[in-house]
Every structure is written in C-alpha cells, then in structure tokens.
Image (tube, rainbow, N blue to C red):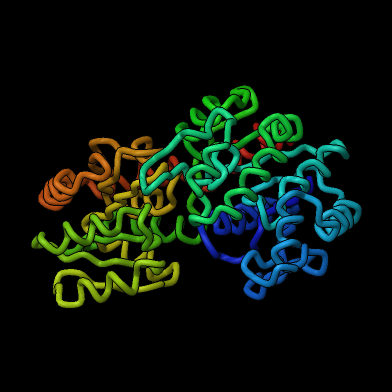
Length: 400
C-alpha cells in the first residue's frame, strides 16, 4: 500500500501541516509507505520527491508573480501538473490523501489522480469548499452566506483582506472548483468533526461520501501524556495555546483575565501578539510566552489547572483542545463549531462566544472546581489514540 499525502507546505506551519506530518509518521510506523507532494518552500523538511515539488508562488509580489499565482489557483499552472504527474508515474500510489491544497497547489491534483483511477480522499481542515475565504467569517462574526454555493457575497463584502481584486479571484476560484467538480473527483471527504460534516451536508455534499474522524495526538506526545496519566502536579495557573488573532477570541480572554485573580500563561504568536504585549505590559497576572516548542507546550498543559479556548469562529477539531484533554487538563471552550463535541461536564465547561461575562464565569467556576485529571486523560487518550485513528484510516478510508 502506497499513500501520497498532498499539502501546500511540508513543515509544522499550522494545524493542517502538523496533521500531515503526524499522519505520515503514523503510517510509516505501521509498515505503510507514505510520501508527500507539496510546494517548494525554504522551511520544508527533506522529502523523497522534493525535487518534484511545485515551485513557490507569491501572491503579494510583482504583477507577474500575481498572474502566476492566479494561474496556480485556477489549476492552469503547468508546473504543478507536470511535477505531480511525475510523482504519480514514479511512486504509483494506491491512495492520494489531500489536505490543505487550495491556491498554492489547487484541486487539479485531485483531478489528475482521479483520472488515473487512484483513490482520492480529502481531509477538511477548514471550510474552503463552502466559503471562498475559508473561515465562514464576516466582520468578525460567523457567516454562512456562501454555504449553498452562491458565492457572489465574497465580492460584495470584499471578504478577502478587504480587497476587491482578491475577492474576485476567490469568487473565480469557487466557480472553477465548484462542489460538483469536487464531489465527482473525490471518493471520500474526511471530516474531523461532526460539525464539519453537518456543514458539508448543508452545502450540498453527499453524506455517503463523508466520514467523521477526529484528529489524533502524535505518538510522542501520546506516550508522554500516557506515562503521566494526568497525575502531574498542577500549578496555580491556567493557559491559552494557539494563534493570537481576532477569531481565536484572545482579546476577550485577555480583557477578562486582567480582572481575574488567577495567573494566565499565553503561548503562541500571531498578528495581535505585539499589541497585546504592550496593552497588558503592566498586568502582573498575564504572562506571554511567545512561540514555544512541542515539549514546552506539553509541559505547559500538563501543569495547568485549566486551558481556555475562547474561539469566535467555527473551529473544526482543534488540536489545542485534544492535547489539553490528553494531558488531563480540563477545557473552558466556546460553544461554537466542533468545540462542544469535545467537552462535557466531566472534562470542562462550555460558554457562549462573544460573551465576556460568560467567559469570566466559566474560568472562575473551572478554577475553583476539583477535577479528575487522571479520568480526563484516560478518556481522551482512548478517544484520540494513534492506533484508533489508524484503524479507521486504513480499514474504512483507505480500504486496505
């Protein structure tokens, strides 16, 4: 069995990339060949077919760069086609497993594989198949105007970075790669949350072509949390792990945290990091850790009394929540997207997004409650184990 994983980047850039790296490691560790096709990028990890990766494109460069990027978006760049076909010719995969491919690679890779009779499966990390700007947000609030396929609103609202030109490109992209084309050339869509599956069905995708499969914890962290069993001594702090950007609800969290008597540790970077550091420089109970590595994240979560996910967008199956629960750390999470599927009364508290009073109450309640950390860890480690994920992936999705 040979699997070809396809993602626009091949380094731990974000959640989608981490899932790709973890999946490749999981497959290889269980005797299944797994190679990667991506776009060339300086930070990429070494790969067998790196010389056949698609060349890098620049969406913000010269007019020539932008024209080439547009051609790439619409699947008209021969560089992607020729390099991908070369990999298919040499590797001869049984399964092409797509991940985050729009714009930098484009769904043309799925069409090329499908034409050869190769099984094509696609893990959905965001809502790009339903929303031209991928996150179902309008003016910072959830929006479903394009879900049914009419994407004219992306131009009317200038959804792409406030740019009319970029919004036109996104509109053309949605027309070129419409849901009929994608449905015909994809054998199975992998939805990491039930919420994603419901959104896809609402958007006209066949539920028989979808399977819900949560993300899993990578084996190294899994063993670390399994050995700890949630028994790590808890220190007197709670934490946030993630991107410091508006849709993550970090601004509301910091405002609430500044008024609470508990210590908050914030791990991650993003567009709001600098401004938030300045704004809360004199707040002694908020500590900004910046970008930290995987081991430091594991130690942070394992030592915390609580982690908070105050997202204000349709989170899919956030790894930050998955990892926190596997560490035995309860989660205070927004009632939005796929977050409520992960949290119940035994492992956390759900609160309404955009409601700072509800967020404050959730944190206060969770910090004053005694939690069964070992029980939280045991339940999560079973649900998000690499072995359970592999069994569904190989038996039901790849169909080995």
